[in-house]
Image 1 (cartoon, rainbow, N blue to C red):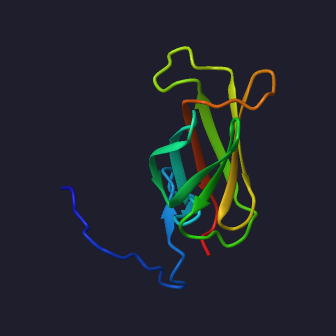
Image 2 (cartoon, rainbow, N blue to C red; image 1 turned 120 degrees about the horizontal axis):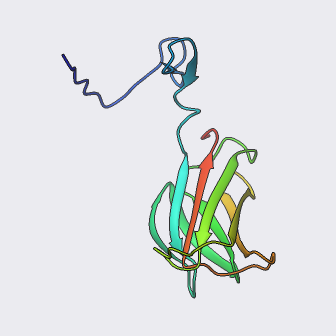
Length: 137
């Protein structure tokens, strides 16, 4: 019989921010907070960049062709967090390959999101994403 648990807040017993989740095999656990994405965005990077949808993103700024600054709403605990992303020329482009995205921390509240073509040149992309993992402050 299935159960439903409805709560507004989860708090760890030994430490408020520590909740362990048992893995599928049952022999190891993962820290719930460490496994959650802390920020993500989906933008149209052509012309004036526009956010389609996002989480924990205050704004996006244009630094030049293929170069954007993602400003976080809530700060990370340090500038040693990890970022990744993806891009293609236009959204829903079935042949949208040959793009690379680098999401690099600048400080605890800003991320440089840079998109490049296969030749290594910065390139605006109609469909650009960025995801941030790490610890919130």
